[in-house]
Length: 270
Image 1 (cartoon, rainbow, N blue to C red):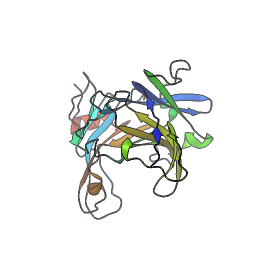
Image 2 (tube, helix red, strand yellow):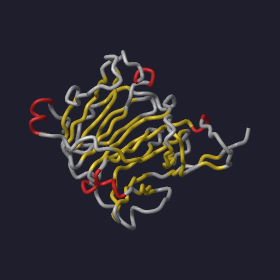
Image 3 (cartoon, rainbow, N blue to C red):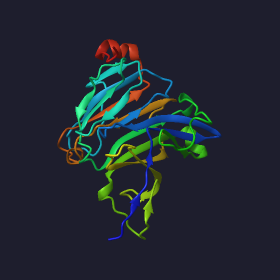
Image 4 (cartoon, one colour):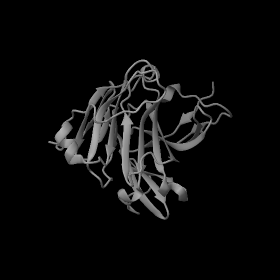
């Protein structure tokens, strides 16, 4: 069997940016712990009132379900960080600003395969502009990965999907090539072609890659500015079972009527 070298961006910090209409905005950060944890941070959104929840998709036999984040949810006035640890513990936190109460047991990273999180944003003006010097290029300390958007992106939702794979178990069909990555073109289960970036921990014990893709879709809400995250899923067998409740973590910034929500369901702010 021919050996294939898999290359990935390996940096202490990865800043994901979006380029549209001659402007480049910072969307979020990805970094890795020495213990092989995965972290996704969101310091660039200007609207800081959010609704966060350990949510449940009801096992009602339906193919789609409405999920109310107020159930199992709390309000925060701070942007949080998502953590997914090797043993599957997943939570939202922000040191010194929020209590780590929105959490659940997800899939251990050694057993995770495929979809691990989704991020949706609307309204690029709600995100900080990238620095032309600092937010450019790749190095072991800091890498900026840029997605270029079509002219129609301003009126749409921008969707990022992160997929987690064990490097040793990856296979590549078609014509064999000695090196794959760090930019990769793939097909999803529906046959749609997507191009994205392979990311990996810079630490020596890294055995996995994160494949990050970006696409545009119809707006999910009429809100002019939105930051939505969901991850920390139950095992795939549970998520795909229509008659079993399935848990996950989610947040939505900006939250509507945050003060009223705070008085009704509480807050995780310190």
